[in-house]
Image 1 (cartoon, rainbow, N blue to C red):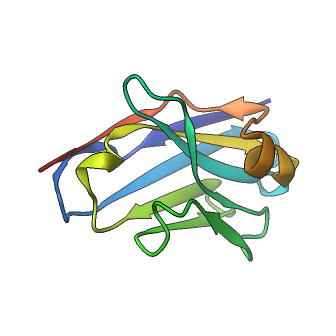
Image 2 (spheres, rainbow, N blue to C red):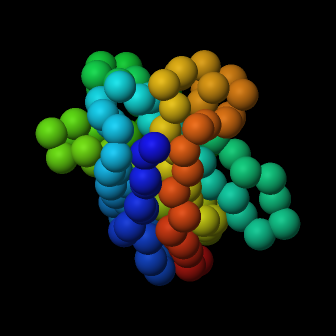
Length: 124
């Protein structure tokens, strides 16, 4: 079992920044690919970013490329999502997810483990 807890969400003005954290406990976190997803009210959950177990390779949705950066510190069992130049359309509940298979996160948009989510609200 892997337990994931997100933090760092909040209210920010358009153009501002936030850094989300996903803290993991349980099994060896460094064995897992981790992704960030988001879900806005009335919309389906969408993929935001992903990072492989070592942190050497990252992936982004086109909508956030150049503005968001995913990173991880396996010594701290934590994955981060630095969000810059935020827009009102980035408003959503953000979830982190972990899975041994990167394909699950990138293609199937599924994962064995999910956090409870953290709210990000960007005002115009």
